[in-house]
Length: 387
Picture (cartoon, rainbow, N blue to C red):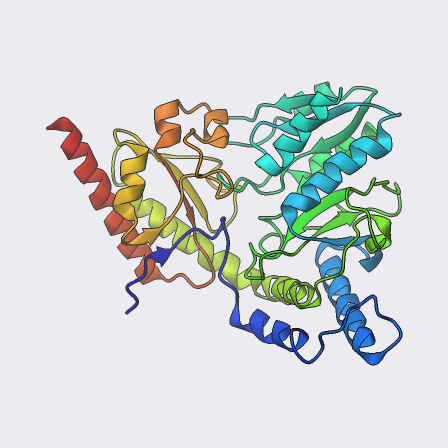
């Protein structure tokens, strides 16, 4: 039996699936060519692999391969989407709408644009973490150029009503961007039926490699313009210059393909494990579920624990379980989760929150052991505070 902590932080990152690694390895050694080198066989091999991978990722979201722009990850994709639209459409308008619960890779580019004279409306969410569609409807203005709403939240796991948001955006002739980093390969995504114009993706949340992502950019009805943020060789239709990382791209496509193939059975299994963990934890008083109980990622459970210090809680769990209190990108900052605060929780509860990210390689036995450790730690901390 492994002595390492049980890994339940799959919203921070996921382990690389062995099948993904196997698909990638030949492109590090045997097929190592540059896909832009079209004068010899090495380049042709790499180009063919990239072309096939682009098709796989496009098919997963019901787009076309020409609409897939490879990036270094979702953070770059979000920056390219938001800054790229702002620059390309500033003559039409300078108003952007997003949510208070978005990832910092969306919030920070929005704040940057505010410093340049753009106006950003940060909509609150309901107490269950979902957007208020009637409030969104009232927020549109003639100069609204972009709405950015995350498909599935990286902390509380709630899945936003993308089709309804897309319909509103299309009605108001505003572009709709969604950060789908946590959603790809886990829930169905369809850029056509959901009327999504721009979508950010990444590989490492779906058992693929770190350092590779993509941006879907609609080409028809409407044709979306994106101003490039990286200039150089003109790769990716001029939207994102830089030599394409063929092994990572192949791994990304393989991970997405596996995620789609296993989605029906894995969704059911993860929901059962999540419910099992929640049933254990909810036996204690003062344990609060964050986010909608059902409209959430199947492997996500986010709870706040009353009557304990958040740092002490994490410290007590560390020997047994790898879990986080919020977004991995900001977890080193001593501040309560902005997503939990947006639900109406006070700062103490926001500090004492746990994000369990259950994944492909977790088992019932692990869930039971984690629950036992968590309950014991909470009880010990509460008892110590009463002494």
